[in-house]
Image (cartoon, rainbow, N blue to C red; front, top):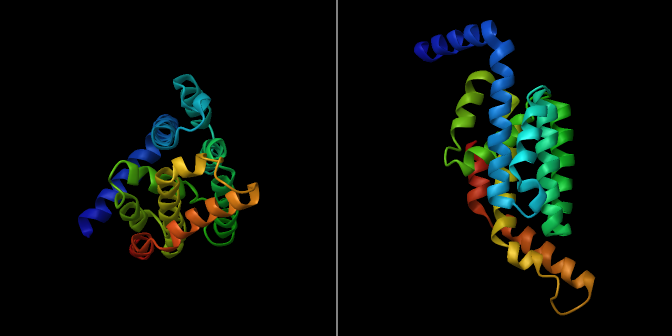
Length: 202
């Protein structure tokens, strides 16, 4: 533990000295990787998958606060979901509202964690983020960590059911189709014991 705390202190001193140069570079890299991973796994809106679009957004966000970057990623993801299914985008909007409310009430400034955990899952290193939170976050950091886990499993559920959600030609009226899509998504989340276990672990 002493070595870990010593490493933490050295990293803080290093970033404190060079943060004016390192922080924009770090933000650009984080944003570009996150946008790339979203496009690779959810790329339902062709315009957003273009490299110039990702580069421009990443360059703009490297000058913005982390919380604004989280908002941009949320909007980026929502556009992809809207291109696939209004039902999926509706559930995601409700999640974003609850996440924003919880963040505002309990832990302002940690919204980027909700973005980083799904990205870490896609990179197959999900437990790196809670380990870092254990060093730099407080006891309430379990809130964005849990929300990040939920966000990943929700997006994963959408990805698995993309064919069904994109099919609006099923028999019955529009309301019946919407009900079928919502039921499919909500049952996929409700029956996912691994998601609940992961939220508790994080």
